[in-house]
Amino acid sequence: MNRQECDILCAIQSESYINQRILSEKTRHSIGVVNRSLKYLIRDGYLGEQVQITEKAKREFDVKAPKNAIILAAGFGMRMIPLSNEIPKGLVEVKGEPLIERTIKQLHQAGINDIYIVVGFMKERYEYLIDEYGVELIVNTEYAAKNNLYSLKLALPYLSNSYIIPCDIWCRLNPYHAYELYSWYMVLDAKDRESTVRVNRKGELVCVTDFSGGNAMLGIAYLLEEQAAKVRDKIESLCKNSRYDGSFWEEALYENKRMIVQAKVTPALDAVEINTYEQLRELDSSSNHLKSGVLSVIGKVLEVKQDEIVNITSLKKGMTNRSFIFESKGKKYIMRIPGEGTDKLIDRKKEADVYRLISGKGICDDPIYINSENGYKITVFLNHARVCDPLNADDLEKCMEKLRCFHELGLEVDHEFDLFEQIEFYESLWNGEKSVYKDYIRTKTNVLTLKNYIDKHIAKKVLTHIDAVPDNFIFADNSLEYGNGKEHLQEEIRLIDWEYAGMQDPHVDIAMFCIYSLYNQLQVDRLIDIYFKGKCPREIRVKIYCYIAVCGLLWSNWCEYKRGLGVEFGEYSLRQYRYAKEYYKIAREEIAWLKEGEDA
Image (cartoon, rainbow, N blue to C red; front, side, top):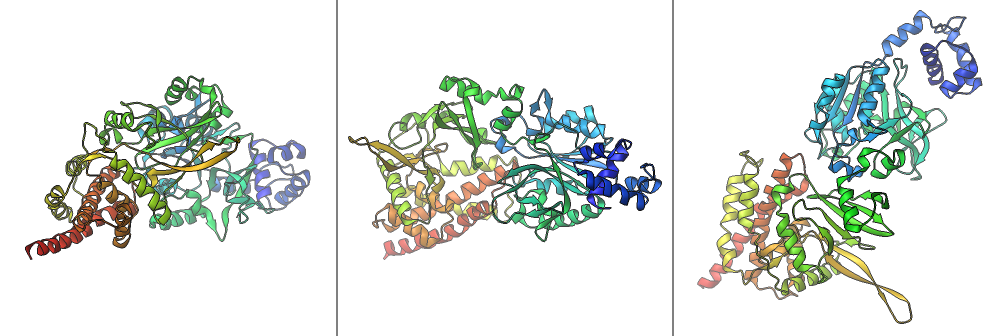
């Protein structure tokens, strides 16, 4: 049977044959296709002369009937921010009903009661579904570091004659059935520039090659055992390669630039993937979850109604925070929401004290609101902004000049960022677990021996950024008006993210810039020369080498804590540990050379 014949046979199985017009409406195939398919189905013995289901067809239905469903609900739902800060995306309500409950009920209506839900972020919020609907939860502990390809891997033992369903789908009509005869992947009849596939004339899903987009991908699929076996093997293979940690499970469906399953096209009005706050508002403007606590804060600060907060777009998730852009009354802003575990890492009162000191001095992003308890922060969006390119010599000159001028202000606050205390503090957050690095104790012991040299060569401690990395130097255009009414755009640099700032040797900021940029020693020396305008005393250069070793261990310990929360930083964390080991050796050799010079 071809796809059209399968569709028509399933339609007759679900409701006795009436006429070809009704069959055409139900299957969305033309009258001509319906007529031709009925002839073939009768000829091949799937239908009797009275267009009734035969025993042969029943056997076919039994073999290919859905056994279960796998719902993928582990992710952060980053694009759902600010809602995802308060509730997992699968529990967002549309028309008074949580998305995932609607999906479960639709599956039950189709006679599918064996349901597995892969959970991760806010997994506890899904626990009630076990009692209310008899589902089984599968916990993905790596939800923060990996995409839903890995989530589906955890459910592979159940993948056969299965529906695969994202948790953030709302379907007006029930897309699930007691009968299925072929494997399919659901797309909409609407175009989407982000889609990587389009439906060709044969009903196949082929890869888009012209970057113009294809059919909007909904994410719902049905896999018979034949295709499920291929997907199981492909997922097992892909998950062995860290390159695919950020991949969607659909990666396993591709073979020779097309999906191994048929397209199932549904009208755009019948199904919606709710990825953003704006999409939820468009679908259900009265949803209880539009009344976000975060948006209430924005409304109070800007003195606007929540429906005047529009065009909400999530920013790429940072190492510490989740942030989003929004507009209100024609002006753009950025809202920062602290990420997982930051309440233990950062003292928000100290951060607020720093912002009070530096705001208005042309140094930072000048928040219009900052909460010293929960870390919420609102700043005006900087136009045409970009971050520093650590490989661009002109950018480095400008950023180091900005950093040097800030240091020369000699600003002071009441708290210090003690590197060595923080190393111990981050380690204490491991809750008694040993480091993942076999030689950690030796590495730490070696790094701590550099403290004496550092202490002897600190001239003065001032307010230091601590996290002065390329991504925190923002280049933005500042509009200046001239008397003739013409406008000129002048580039300015602001330093953002002052969460770790405190009293410290300002040369720590140079080391931090280097290790975040993953510089080699030649690049490190070049940056030092730029900051000091080519006049850095050797003993200070060596001190910066020491700081690179110390800061490498510091952030390695920080990464180990975050890893325990399910947040993985890949190469970055490994390289930080390498800086601790390698620059300890470089610093010791340089210190020995300086000592020989003194002795001579």
